[in-house]
Image (cartoon, rainbow, N blue to C red):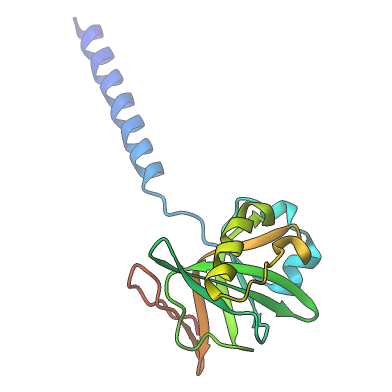
Length: 170
């Protein structure tokens, strides 16, 4: 009888320890996004960053910002540049007020194939009314699908993302 009780207590302890371990594992925050300058990202190559959240730092190419409402959501595209390298960016939600031609920005997002976002590019340019069709893969076969956009303002970066949060990067 003593032996059965020890076995029950042992199994219960193992079960509780396993449950606690799974709970702690599930509560782990996601890994932080990898921060990189645009030219470093392009020179390092895109392969190792597929599926990884990135924070890409660069400057907006003058005249490249195109904005439109797509399915009731503000969307935009622009070209990010640094040291002679360029990458097309798509983002959703409102643009920070300081995002304009030649502005220093950080885009938080994921690499996506240009062909996957070509329909969005077509919609944005059609809404602009120019009749111009952007070919997203003209510069690279991959583009950056942004989930948040931070624009330089004074000595910090600010955003107005759809969640209402306004993180600052000094």
